Image 1 (tube, each protein chain N blue to C red):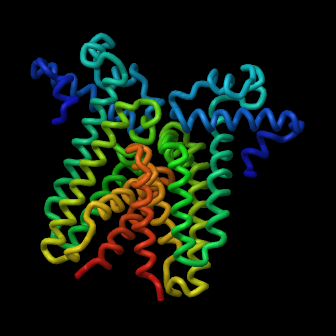
Image 2: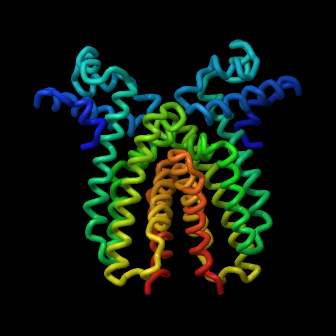
Image 3: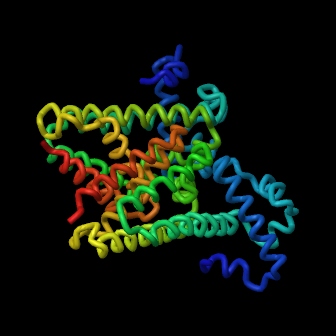
Length: 207
Length: 207
């Protein structure tokens, strides 16, 4: 749970927390599926089964709700990533990680692209606080990749002199660019091909 | 000039064409700098020095204007890319191409990211016609990269058995993901590092 969520949920009852989470989940889903511009507060209210006054009780404005959506999607995406990257012990595991990403976008028929990447693309120029929050999310994601690469290095799967930070950034870019192309083309093969190229490069860095 | 532009500009006088182009350029700039959601028709009118009725004379609605913006940004981005990729004869030229991208985002202080990528991220779920147009733009960009890689292959800089389509897709993903990370972090080193990784991989495919 991040700072934003803590601030937003301080002093809420369990029932209040559940209502707040229902609003955030509904907003996250609507924004992912219809885009930032098309996800209206009225639609979020209807999807979360709350009144306008309930929504404003939890979120003073759309910006506050968007920050909570960023937290929500960050925990969701990084939770999935962490589960796979924490046990990165081989190139087979790296390929399994790629398939987790491909299955995830396939399950959405490529709608929404990356839940964090699409928020970054939509919000970076209109909401500087959201942009900073998303930059932090990407830094955490990169950190998970760094740890995974270090694990592989320590197990002798990668050379001792690899630049784990630069490689993690390059891999994250291939995921983000691949997902954007998959979203635009409605074709999950784009992200598979893009991440495959990153993995192929890593194979050249074996001892 | 693409089909959309032709349809939109049919039967326009040179003065009309110039006014239309001024509106499109103003819209493209505002959307890039402030995001799709924040670029209002009134702001576009003011920036292009046209009245509402003039704007509606050229574009029946915001969707029509957005399609013209996609055309405009596609020609701009692919024009720059083509100029560099058409003379791709060495790894030095490939690094110069990477620097063109880095300089381009640096000149904007990373605002707006990729003019096509940010449109794709903002529009893919709310405007299916825009999404298809952007998928075509990405396909053309990938095609320029394929030609560049084939040139390098034919000159003996890359192995004869490279899969130019897959490599071009992976490189385009590294550009798109790198630019999204640069936009979000306000740091052009992200796209340089991401594209560097693609180039490093290509170096492993030398004969």
